Image (cartoon, rainbow, N blue to C red; front, side, top):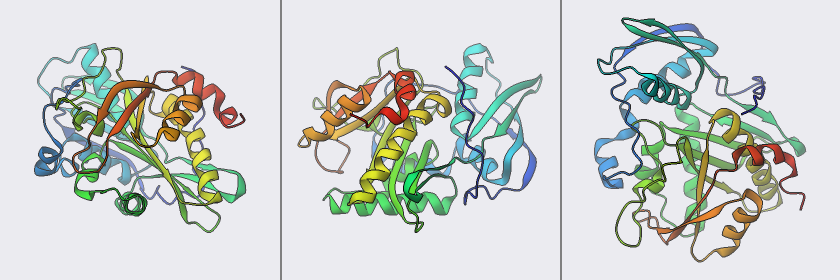
Amino acid sequence: MEQMDLPQNRGSKTDTGSQDSLELSLDLGDLLLLDQVTESFDDLIAREQYRYGPLFKLKECRVTLRPGGTLNLTNTHQGVLDASYLRRQEMLLRVAGFTDMTVVGGSPFMVQAVRRPAVVEEQEYGMVVRELITAREILSSHEFAREYYFYKDYNYDYEVARQFDLHSDVYAVYDKTDEMVALARAAVRSPGYYCPFMYAITEDGSHFRLPERCHVIGEIMAIYKEGKSGVVAYKRLMEFLTQYACHIARADTILTTYAVNDPYTGNYYKSKFMMDEAGVALTYRDFGGKWILLWTDKILELSKLHRDLFKK
Protein backbone atom coordinates (compact mmCIF):
# COMPACT_ATOMS: atom_id res chain seq x y z
CA MET A 1 0.00 0.00 0.00
CA GLU A 2 1.09 3.60 -0.55
CA GLN A 3 2.59 5.36 2.43
CA MET A 4 1.02 8.35 4.16
CA ASP A 5 2.79 10.95 6.28
CA LEU A 6 1.14 10.62 9.67
CA PRO A 7 -0.16 13.86 11.19
CA GLN A 8 2.37 15.59 13.40
CA ASN A 9 1.53 15.99 17.06
CA ARG A 10 -0.18 19.35 17.50
CA GLY A 11 -1.22 19.85 21.09
CA SER A 12 -2.37 16.29 21.71
CA LYS A 13 -3.52 15.60 25.23
CA THR A 14 -2.36 12.01 24.93
CA ASP A 15 1.37 12.31 24.29
CA THR A 16 2.52 12.78 27.86
CA GLY A 17 5.42 10.30 27.85
CA SER A 18 8.93 11.66 28.35
CA GLN A 19 11.38 8.76 28.05
CA ASP A 20 13.62 8.65 24.98
CA SER A 21 14.08 4.88 25.16
CA LEU A 22 13.08 1.86 27.20
CA GLU A 23 14.44 -1.65 27.65
CA LEU A 24 11.91 -4.47 28.01
CA SER A 25 12.49 -8.21 28.39
CA LEU A 26 9.32 -10.18 27.76
CA ASP A 27 8.23 -13.61 26.57
CA LEU A 28 5.69 -12.87 23.85
CA GLY A 29 4.75 -16.54 23.62
CA ASP A 30 3.66 -18.43 20.52
CA LEU A 31 1.65 -15.47 19.15
CA LEU A 32 -1.24 -17.64 17.99
CA LEU A 33 -3.65 -16.04 15.55
CA LEU A 34 -6.88 -18.02 15.49
CA ASP A 35 -9.69 -17.70 12.95
CA GLN A 36 -12.30 -18.83 15.49
CA VAL A 37 -12.56 -18.60 19.27
CA THR A 38 -14.05 -21.17 21.63
CA GLU A 39 -14.41 -19.08 24.79
CA SER A 40 -17.23 -16.71 25.69
CA PHE A 41 -17.54 -13.09 26.82
CA ASP A 42 -17.92 -14.44 30.36
CA ASP A 43 -14.62 -16.30 30.01
CA LEU A 44 -12.97 -13.00 29.05
CA ILE A 45 -14.43 -11.25 32.07
CA ALA A 46 -13.28 -14.05 34.38
CA ARG A 47 -9.65 -13.82 33.26
CA GLU A 48 -9.62 -9.99 33.09
CA GLN A 49 -7.98 -9.79 29.68
CA TYR A 50 -7.61 -6.00 29.93
CA ARG A 51 -5.15 -6.29 32.84
CA TYR A 52 -2.64 -8.90 31.70
CA GLY A 53 -0.64 -10.21 28.78
CA PRO A 54 2.02 -8.84 26.42
CA LEU A 55 -0.09 -5.95 25.14
CA PHE A 56 -0.56 -4.70 28.70
CA LYS A 57 3.23 -4.36 29.10
CA LEU A 58 3.74 -2.95 25.60
CA LYS A 59 1.07 -0.29 26.05
CA GLU A 60 2.62 0.70 29.37
CA CYS A 61 5.79 1.36 27.39
CA ARG A 62 3.87 3.39 24.83
CA VAL A 63 2.53 5.90 27.33
CA THR A 64 5.93 6.15 29.05
CA LEU A 65 7.91 6.85 25.88
CA ARG A 66 7.86 10.20 24.16
CA PRO A 67 6.49 10.22 20.59
CA GLY A 68 9.29 8.85 18.43
CA GLY A 69 10.96 7.20 21.41
CA THR A 70 12.55 3.77 21.01
CA LEU A 71 11.55 0.48 22.60
CA ASN A 72 14.34 -2.10 22.79
CA LEU A 73 12.47 -5.36 23.25
CA THR A 74 14.13 -8.65 24.11
CA ASN A 75 11.68 -11.43 23.28
CA THR A 76 12.68 -14.40 25.46
CA HIS A 77 10.35 -16.83 23.70
CA GLN A 78 12.07 -20.19 23.19
CA GLY A 79 9.97 -21.39 20.25
CA VAL A 80 10.55 -21.15 16.51
CA LEU A 81 11.27 -17.58 15.39
CA ASP A 82 10.61 -17.93 11.65
CA ALA A 83 9.34 -15.35 9.14
CA SER A 84 5.71 -16.07 10.06
CA TYR A 85 6.46 -15.48 13.73
CA LEU A 86 8.20 -12.18 12.94
CA ARG A 87 5.13 -11.00 11.00
CA ARG A 88 2.87 -11.80 13.95
CA GLN A 89 5.28 -10.07 16.34
CA GLU A 90 5.19 -6.98 14.13
CA MET A 91 1.39 -7.12 14.12
CA LEU A 92 1.34 -7.17 17.93
CA LEU A 93 3.76 -4.24 18.17
CA ARG A 94 1.74 -2.24 15.64
CA VAL A 95 -1.44 -2.78 17.67
CA ALA A 96 0.48 -1.63 20.76
CA GLY A 97 1.24 1.68 19.04
CA PHE A 98 4.69 1.08 17.58
CA THR A 99 6.11 1.30 14.09
CA ASP A 100 9.42 0.91 12.22
CA MET A 101 10.22 -2.49 13.73
CA THR A 102 13.83 -3.67 13.22
CA VAL A 103 15.38 -6.95 14.33
CA VAL A 104 18.74 -6.10 15.91
CA GLY A 105 19.87 -9.39 17.42
CA GLY A 106 19.33 -13.12 17.29
CA SER A 107 20.53 -14.55 20.59
CA PRO A 108 18.83 -13.29 22.64
CA PHE A 109 16.19 -12.22 20.12
CA MET A 110 15.90 -8.42 20.09
CA VAL A 111 13.80 -5.95 18.14
CA GLN A 112 13.70 -2.16 18.11
CA ALA A 113 10.44 -0.31 17.60
CA VAL A 114 9.52 3.38 17.47
CA ARG A 115 6.57 4.78 19.41
CA ARG A 116 3.99 6.15 16.98
CA PRO A 117 2.73 9.64 17.86
CA ALA A 118 -0.90 9.86 18.88
CA VAL A 119 -2.92 11.13 15.92
CA VAL A 120 -4.34 14.64 16.01
CA GLU A 121 -6.07 15.77 12.81
CA GLU A 122 -7.80 19.12 12.52
CA GLN A 123 -11.15 19.18 10.75
CA GLU A 124 -13.57 21.79 9.48
CA TYR A 125 -15.85 23.79 11.80
CA GLY A 126 -13.25 23.82 14.57
CA MET A 127 -13.42 20.05 15.05
CA VAL A 128 -10.47 17.77 15.67
CA VAL A 129 -9.98 14.01 15.52
CA ARG A 130 -7.87 12.89 18.46
CA GLU A 131 -6.50 9.46 19.28
CA LEU A 132 -7.14 8.37 22.86
CA ILE A 133 -4.43 6.34 24.59
CA THR A 134 -4.27 7.13 28.32
CA ALA A 135 -6.35 5.22 30.86
CA ARG A 136 -8.42 8.31 31.64
CA GLU A 137 -9.15 8.96 27.96
CA ILE A 138 -10.14 5.35 27.32
CA LEU A 139 -12.52 5.54 30.29
CA SER A 140 -14.08 8.69 28.81
CA SER A 141 -14.71 6.77 25.58
CA HIS A 142 -16.58 4.08 27.53
CA GLU A 143 -18.64 6.74 29.29
CA PHE A 144 -19.58 8.30 25.94
CA ALA A 145 -20.53 4.91 24.48
CA ARG A 146 -22.48 3.87 27.56
CA GLU A 147 -24.55 7.08 27.41
CA TYR A 148 -25.23 6.56 23.71
CA TYR A 149 -26.32 2.96 24.08
CA PHE A 150 -28.38 3.77 27.18
CA TYR A 151 -30.23 6.31 25.05
CA LYS A 152 -30.71 3.64 22.39
CA ASP A 153 -31.98 1.16 25.02
CA TYR A 154 -29.09 -1.28 24.73
CA ASN A 155 -27.05 -2.72 27.55
CA TYR A 156 -23.49 -1.38 27.31
CA ASP A 157 -21.65 -3.60 29.78
CA TYR A 158 -18.34 -1.99 30.79
CA GLU A 159 -17.05 -5.31 32.13
CA VAL A 160 -17.40 -6.76 28.63
CA ALA A 161 -16.28 -3.71 26.67
CA ARG A 162 -13.05 -3.08 28.55
CA GLN A 163 -11.79 -6.60 27.84
CA PHE A 164 -10.99 -5.24 24.34
CA ASP A 165 -9.19 -2.07 25.46
CA LEU A 166 -5.67 -3.42 24.97
CA HIS A 167 -6.12 -4.20 21.28
CA SER A 168 -8.48 -1.37 20.37
CA ASP A 169 -7.48 1.88 18.68
CA VAL A 170 -9.78 4.64 19.89
CA TYR A 171 -10.47 7.91 18.07
CA ALA A 172 -12.84 10.71 19.06
CA VAL A 173 -14.00 13.92 17.42
CA TYR A 174 -14.14 17.00 19.64
CA ASP A 175 -15.98 20.19 18.75
CA LYS A 176 -14.64 23.73 19.23
CA THR A 177 -15.73 23.65 22.88
CA ASP A 178 -13.62 20.50 23.39
CA GLU A 179 -16.69 18.32 23.86
CA MET A 180 -16.63 14.76 22.48
CA VAL A 181 -19.27 14.48 19.75
CA ALA A 182 -18.29 11.28 17.92
CA LEU A 183 -16.34 8.16 18.79
CA ALA A 184 -14.86 5.15 17.00
CA ARG A 185 -13.33 2.08 18.61
CA ALA A 186 -11.54 -0.36 16.31
CA ALA A 187 -10.74 -3.71 17.93
CA VAL A 188 -7.93 -5.22 15.88
CA ARG A 189 -7.46 -8.98 15.79
CA SER A 190 -3.90 -9.65 16.86
CA PRO A 191 -2.03 -12.64 18.30
CA GLY A 192 -3.87 -13.73 21.43
CA TYR A 193 -6.51 -10.99 21.13
CA TYR A 194 -9.71 -11.20 19.10
CA CYS A 195 -12.54 -8.97 17.92
CA PRO A 196 -15.87 -8.81 19.81
CA PHE A 197 -17.81 -10.33 16.89
CA MET A 198 -15.71 -13.48 17.19
CA TYR A 199 -17.11 -14.04 20.70
CA ALA A 200 -20.70 -13.33 19.66
CA ILE A 201 -23.00 -16.28 18.98
CA THR A 202 -24.54 -17.03 15.60
CA GLU A 203 -28.12 -18.24 15.28
CA ASP A 204 -27.04 -21.88 15.45
CA GLY A 205 -25.13 -21.22 18.69
CA SER A 206 -21.63 -21.34 17.21
CA HIS A 207 -18.87 -18.75 16.87
CA PHE A 208 -18.20 -17.16 13.47
CA ARG A 209 -15.12 -18.49 11.67
CA LEU A 210 -13.09 -15.97 9.69
CA PRO A 211 -12.41 -16.74 6.03
CA GLU A 212 -8.78 -17.65 5.36
CA ARG A 213 -8.29 -14.56 3.20
CA CYS A 214 -8.72 -12.29 6.26
CA HIS A 215 -5.44 -11.62 8.04
CA VAL A 216 -5.22 -8.11 9.49
CA ILE A 217 -8.78 -7.28 10.47
CA GLY A 218 -10.57 -4.80 12.67
CA GLU A 219 -14.10 -4.50 13.99
CA ILE A 220 -15.24 -0.88 14.09
CA MET A 221 -17.91 0.62 16.33
CA ALA A 222 -18.68 4.26 15.48
CA ILE A 223 -21.30 6.45 17.19
CA TYR A 224 -22.15 10.15 17.48
CA LYS A 225 -24.19 12.61 19.50
CA GLU A 226 -27.59 13.69 18.30
CA GLY A 227 -27.81 16.87 16.26
CA LYS A 228 -26.05 18.53 13.34
CA SER A 229 -22.63 18.73 14.98
CA GLY A 230 -22.76 15.02 15.79
CA VAL A 231 -23.64 14.08 12.21
CA VAL A 232 -20.87 16.26 10.79
CA ALA A 233 -18.39 14.85 13.29
CA TYR A 234 -19.43 11.30 12.42
CA LYS A 235 -18.82 11.87 8.71
CA ARG A 236 -15.40 13.38 9.40
CA LEU A 237 -14.55 10.46 11.66
CA MET A 238 -15.63 7.86 9.10
CA GLU A 239 -13.55 9.61 6.44
CA PHE A 240 -10.59 9.55 8.79
CA LEU A 241 -11.08 5.83 9.43
CA THR A 242 -10.50 5.08 5.74
CA GLN A 243 -6.99 6.48 6.25
CA TYR A 244 -6.56 4.74 9.59
CA ALA A 245 -7.43 1.31 8.19
CA CYS A 246 -5.09 1.68 5.23
CA HIS A 247 -2.06 3.41 6.69
CA ILE A 248 -2.05 2.87 10.45
CA ALA A 249 -3.73 -0.48 11.05
CA ARG A 250 -2.52 -1.80 7.65
CA ALA A 251 -5.79 -3.76 7.56
CA ASP A 252 -6.94 -6.03 4.76
CA THR A 253 -10.49 -6.42 6.14
CA ILE A 254 -12.78 -4.16 8.17
CA LEU A 255 -15.98 -5.41 9.78
CA THR A 256 -18.88 -3.77 11.53
CA THR A 257 -22.50 -4.58 12.39
CA TYR A 258 -25.95 -3.09 12.18
CA ALA A 259 -29.08 -3.99 14.10
CA VAL A 260 -31.49 -6.32 12.29
CA ASN A 261 -34.28 -3.78 12.78
CA ASP A 262 -32.21 -0.89 11.36
CA PRO A 263 -31.82 -1.54 7.61
CA TYR A 264 -31.02 2.15 6.96
CA THR A 265 -27.66 1.77 8.72
CA GLY A 266 -26.92 -1.40 6.78
CA ASN A 267 -27.69 0.24 3.45
CA TYR A 268 -25.55 3.22 4.47
CA TYR A 269 -22.52 1.01 5.13
CA LYS A 270 -23.09 -0.91 1.91
CA SER A 271 -23.41 2.18 -0.30
CA LYS A 272 -20.75 4.38 1.30
CA PHE A 273 -18.18 1.83 2.47
CA MET A 274 -18.52 -0.93 -0.12
CA MET A 275 -19.51 -3.46 2.52
CA ASP A 276 -21.20 -6.81 2.02
CA GLU A 277 -23.14 -8.94 4.46
CA ALA A 278 -21.22 -11.90 5.89
CA GLY A 279 -24.41 -13.98 6.05
CA VAL A 280 -24.78 -14.23 9.83
CA ALA A 281 -26.80 -12.58 12.58
CA LEU A 282 -24.93 -12.26 15.87
CA THR A 283 -25.94 -12.01 19.51
CA TYR A 284 -23.46 -10.14 21.72
CA ARG A 285 -24.15 -11.73 25.12
CA ASP A 286 -26.84 -9.55 26.80
CA PHE A 287 -26.14 -6.41 24.74
CA GLY A 288 -29.57 -6.60 23.13
CA GLY A 289 -30.92 -7.34 19.68
CA LYS A 290 -29.40 -9.24 16.79
CA TRP A 291 -26.66 -7.75 14.66
CA ILE A 292 -25.88 -8.34 10.99
CA LEU A 293 -22.16 -8.67 10.30
CA LEU A 294 -20.78 -6.63 7.40
CA TRP A 295 -17.29 -6.65 5.93
CA THR A 296 -15.16 -5.06 3.22
CA ASP A 297 -11.69 -5.69 1.86
CA LYS A 298 -11.73 -2.59 -0.37
CA ILE A 299 -9.43 -0.72 2.01
CA LEU A 300 -7.21 0.96 -0.56
CA GLU A 301 -10.18 2.02 -2.69
CA LEU A 302 -11.83 3.65 0.33
CA SER A 303 -8.61 5.36 1.31
CA LYS A 304 -8.31 6.91 -2.13
CA LEU A 305 -11.90 8.18 -1.98
CA HIS A 306 -11.35 9.79 1.44
CA ARG A 307 -13.11 13.21 1.33
CA ASP A 308 -15.20 12.14 -1.66
CA LEU A 309 -17.08 9.56 0.43
CA PHE A 310 -20.03 11.77 1.29
CA LYS A 311 -20.30 13.91 -1.85
CA LYS A 312 -23.11 11.80 -3.32
